[in-house]
Length: 114
Length: 115
Image (cartoon, rainbow over all chains, first blue to last red):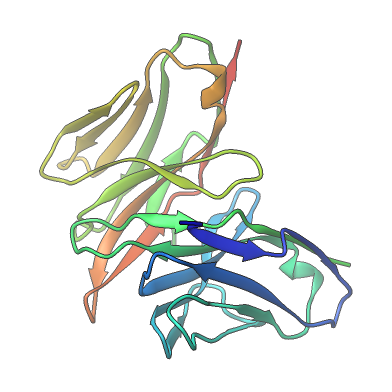
């Protein structure tokens, strides 16, 4: 199993450009989420999905869109990149079970907006 | 509002020493408390976790101590090694409407173990 795969690993965008960060998992997890990680701010939830066709906003959703057409894929779209979106982005999928919530993370996408 | 408060922000320990990272929470509905370890350039990965009906859990050199009455839990790394140098996140999990679980994260602790 590959686990959670994110592409690209690095990206530089100009202000105003749009792009899609890809995330795919092969563990058949229903629950997936996108986080951004900034120094001193921990992991902040952008959007999440509890299954195909179902998405919802997290703590910092502005400037980002998501969709979930399949269980495997959960892309994150930046509509019009801004320097404030410079960050490291992580996609995670979550193992099922009420007694635990193990999150499996991708390797991250380091995004720089200039 | 930070629902899980983690300290210290950074920690330097000598090889062979004990590393201690603390977390405190407010919501008594949390029912699962994991610790994640993140190496540079990688995503976080589950290290060890505990439920509130247990006061301590040990896995190798890593131990979680849980104090339900104080609403605090901590990670102890015994015989710390340079390979333990990483960022550590505590988290707390809660069931939400629709039987979905939510993870609330601490802000992280950067641990450096000097050789």
